[in-house]
Amino acid sequence: AQTVTQSQPEMSVQEAETVTLSCTYDTSESDYYLFWYKQPPSRQMILVIRQEAYKQQNATENRFSVNFQKAAKSFSLKISDSQLGDAAMYFCAYRSPYGGSQGNLIFGKGTKLSVKP
Amino acid sequence: ETGVTQSPTHLIKTRGQQVTLRCSSQSGHNTVSWYQQALGQGPQFIFQYYREEENGRGNFPPRFSGLQFPNYSSELNVNALELDDSALYLCATRSGTGENSPLHFGNGTRLTVT
Image 1: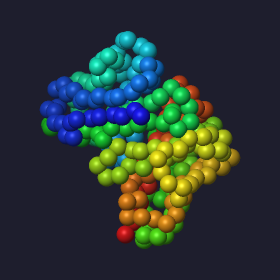
Image 2: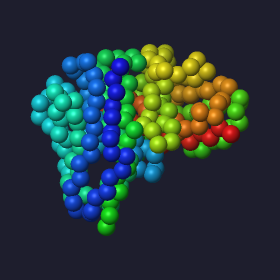
Image 3: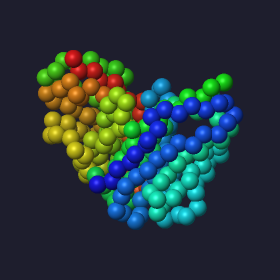
Image 4: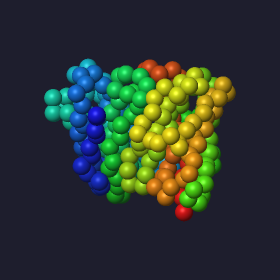
């Protein structure tokens, strides 16, 4: 069974600075998808960025980028020029490419990010 | 705004009771998944419905059941509530089952069992 581990329960960053959130996962599959979701106090899960395992190039979305190390099974999220609105819980998630119950998201326990003005 | 609406937002029930949570989504979103998020944890997959049939289930007992309707709304039913059922329940919908179709989450229903 696949597992996702986020070893940083809480992180803090100064506004305009850069922060990196860590995520490791375990799987025997060669093809899969990885995601970072943001959950603000409104509770809604918002997709931040996604990575397909077959792509060697790291995904980027504006101020958000990932460092995907497939051999090490590591998937970290870098937030550049941090803003107050970035404060939230961040969840790393894994998804198998198969359908049915295998196609659901497997989440880590999350990292609470605080942004200091 | 994702177009996914969950009701109610908060709910308090007593152990042993039954509860129904609801989710409505955009037209065309024929896949719906339900997740349970306990306090301080990441969401856990309960089950998924595609075109009104369950096509995937996580490690949850049969007292967790669901329905999906032709109008793209869905329900999560939990019988014989236990204290550990207290959690945030999230509904997520998409069009089809392929990865290229993004997943849209609702704001969740906070269930408290006393």
